[in-house]
Length: 114
Length: 109
Image (cartoon, rainbow over all chains, first blue to last red; front, side, top):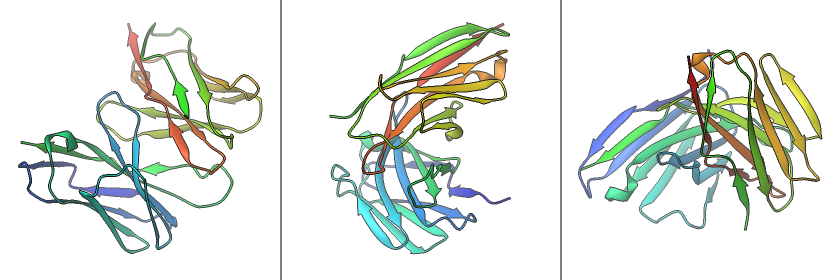
C-alpha cells in the first residue's frame, strides 16, 4: 500500500542533543510538509517543499532545519532541542494544484526532551 | 489575522447524533477540510467542501456556508471508535491550510 512512513515513532533526547526525524513516501506526491503538533493544539506548519523548492514558514525557529534529498525522502533536523520542542512531529504529503490536494499524514514521531 | 474556531470538547452517547461546528475568518477561501485524529495518531482525511451545501459520506456528513464562514461535521449512529479529535482546516487565498485546534469528541456507552 502506498503510504507515508515516519521514523522513529518515538524519540527521547537530552536538552541540546541534536535529533533527526525521517519521512519517506511511496505516493509519488510532489509536496511534502513537516508539522509540529502539541497536545490539544492545531498542527503548526514548519516547512514544506514543492518538488525541490523549499518553503520555510516565517515563524519557524532557526533551530529547525530540513532536507529533501529526493522525491521520496524528507528529514527534519532539530539542532539543539529545548524543552519547548517536545511535541508530535507530523510529515504529510500531497499533490500540488488548486484542487482538494488532500494531505496524507505519516503516523508521526513523538519527541521527548529531557 | 486568520482564525478557525471549534468547540474544545464535546460529549455524546453511543448510537446518537452529534454536530461539530467550525467557524472561520480567513484571507480568501479555497476549500474546507475535516480530519479525524485519534489520540497519539496522525490526522486522517474525512471530508472536503468547496461549494455550499451538504456532502454525505456514510455516517459522516459535512456542511458548508461560505457566506456565513461556517461548517459543521455531522456524525450519525455514533460508535465508541468515533472517540477522537476532529480538526477543521481552511485553505486560504494562497492555498495555505489554516488549522483549527480540534474538537475532542468523547463517546459514552
